[in-house]
Image (cartoon, rainbow, N blue to C red; front, side, top):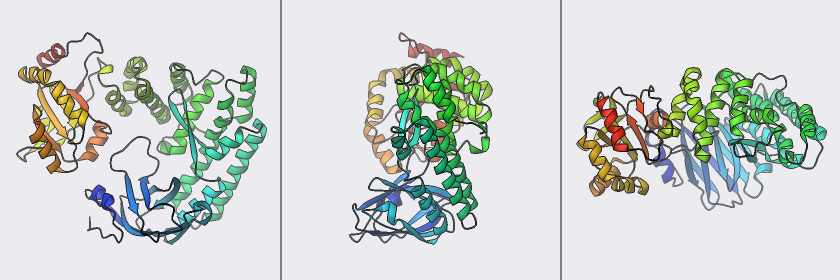
Length: 473
């Protein structure tokens, strides 16, 4: 990657992108009149979960101006957050944009010029047509469903027939806008927003009925469902759309819609929603939704019985998603040990290249940590005696630092000296993909066959004894 030159100081952006190997440098200019803040934040759009190094700060000059280089690895959607206002932006290898607006009225004054402006002026017009990009999120049975803020607000005061008519009117206007810009915008932008219009309409239907779940009787809810007709005429098993945020959001809405008139806000409603997903969805859509629900239930409640009961079926029907569930539940799912651990490239304290495969035939206890992670360091100290017992019986303790800077890892290793083999991860990107290191401390057990192993969930379990069994097998 070529050296970055930035007119306005953007230290965070430089640090976060220094490791990008195949990025293309896109020059972007910001010109803000009557600026109400001195910083703009950029994030990749459509992220479901927390990801490392995805949000970057751009400092504006006193005149509200910034010019900077933004590396991209292929055409992508990003979001500029200006003082709480989200500006969707599309960038590809040809882009060279100037983004200008009045800080006191972004929506009405937002303009794009330069290469790529056609795509982004269309996106701005699409958002105006939708009365802004502001969203509200509702948690139903641990499924976070996103609705248009303006449609959700309007739906509180109008009958279901009027609400449905307003959704159709908005959708038709969006389709007309797509047709108007068809010859001037890229295929990717056209396809993305065509899908967005279709599935946002479906998801937003649920925003009318959810606030009324406890006000309407069963007959009233069924009548409203009939008028709303969520999902009528759409195919809900399109693998090509599984990465589109509006499609995934509509899948969640459909699951809750099929559960009504039961109350989706009850604590254990997810146990009945899971089989509804299996009944109404198929293929990649079902795999995504079942996995997503299992992960969200455990993430938000710690309840593991659903995951424990479904993990076997999930392995057979959706093996590509199983590892994500196993990593989330960890030791709370026992007895399932046939998933291979992805290899990890590391260097040891002598600077030698180390690989996880170097320990094939041994039981390995992985501990992911960082110099800035106080719970990680406290965990090393608290479990020192147990870790010593594990090492004495032949378990290989591998402590993997995810520090961005090698020097920070070396300093922390000297200060804290964790017991075991101390290494520094070379590729955070590979770790994030294979081990979900969005939160640390994170621990994994690898058996002699190179597969993930799990401890029992009994409160009276003997951890040392369970490791002894793994070492003997």
